[in-house]
Amino acid sequence: MFVLYAFLVTIGILFIDLIYIKTFQLENYKLKNQIIKTKNLDFAFGNKTPLIFTMRIKRLLFIDFLIKFVIFLLIFGLIPLFWVNLLLTVLLFIISPYYVFLSFIFASPIENFIKKRYIKRAKRKLESMSCKKIAITGSFGKTSTKNILYQILKVEFDVCATPKSFNTPMGICKTILEDLKDTDDFFIVEFGARQTGDIKFLADMVGVDFGIITPIGNCHLQTFGSLKNIENTKYELCENTKELVVFNGKSKSTKKLYDKFKNKKYLVCENGSFAYAKDIVSNENGSKFTLVLNNSEFCCCTKLLGKSNIDNIVVASTMAYLLGENILSIIKGISNLHQIAHRLELIKGEFVTVIDDSYNSNIEGFKQALDVLSGFKGRKIVVSPGIIELGAEQFKINFLAGEMVGKVADVFIIMNETNKKALSEGASKVKDIYFANSREEQSHILKDILKQGDIVLFENDFPDNIK
Image (tube, rainbow, N blue to C red; front, side, top):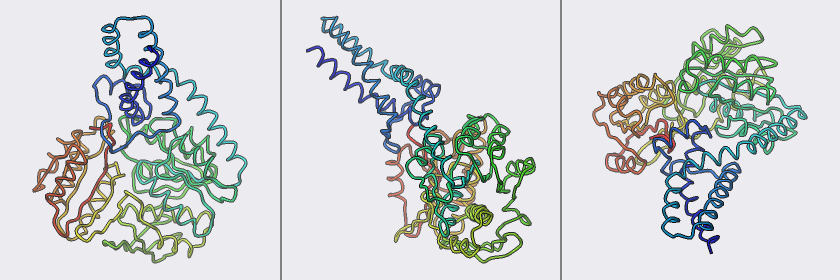
């Protein structure tokens, strides 16, 4: 009978453990971060970002179950006293988050073995294929540039690209093993990084032929420590690219890397550079511009919004041109570009218009989104939690974001507590400011205040592990 009791109690506590394990997943399995979250009882409650039951999570849950089941078997089997069993069960329930650490430690050798084997399989497959590998890194615009380049190259070539924001070793390996085909001419991959050495690791894994450096700035300062460390990490792509690198010159840091790099390179997005856009005209239906590419001019139109997206188009068009795509195919690709989900995505309704920029998470993107919003007619509403992972610059940059909102918006709904003070102080000129700690609160506020013809900008979104 005690075996059944042990099983039922273990299953019950395991359901509670899902909250702790979800927090662990959102913290990218960083043990130090999880310890801090546990110490502060700061767990990922909410349904914005559900727990994804990957194989890694399933293995972690299985080990967690085994540890607790064995403990309860010993307790119920060796101690016949009910009140002692109850007291020990309550105690184990209270300290259950710390058993997740123990499960993680037991699982780590298994995970490391699986990871190395997975990477080895992906590298072996890539080495057997003739496709050219194009890697993209930077602080801003990586995913958008990747998606635009994919759509332009698809006009003439067979192309595979990492989906969504897949930019970690396991995400890239998954794409290589499941999606990359022998007939593909190009493989476009996005490289993410949170610390020095990450880009070099990914470049060694993929074997990069062509590189793209997007604008670089103060992103993930909390883990990198300084802008210089960010620059050095992004430069790892340049050092590990075989043929050439295209640099988006819209940031000082990217231009610094361009000057530093001595191999074949192209600077774009600056007037007079190899490629840039001029005569840009934008409205709620999209943008028109002149693409200057290798001293020739071409009229282009696109459904995409924002000057940053025009720059991303210039970068992608340059790479496609250097890869041998016909200019007419490039222009056709630009005209057929579809909006990128959650990145300045325009959603027109009969009652209101929504600009969904909820996957943006940097001050430059914030500014670009507000520039787009300013071009619309109607009452302007901004919904945002601000920006995170900025270290000592957190308050200053979010105060600046609030000031920018104050110049454009009529209504500001500030989400979550993290940047509430900085955003509200910066946005003091906004007539109406509201605060919401959940999507439910946000929905109620919008339901109460929305009027016909309003424009609502959703700028950035926090997962459940950020309050």
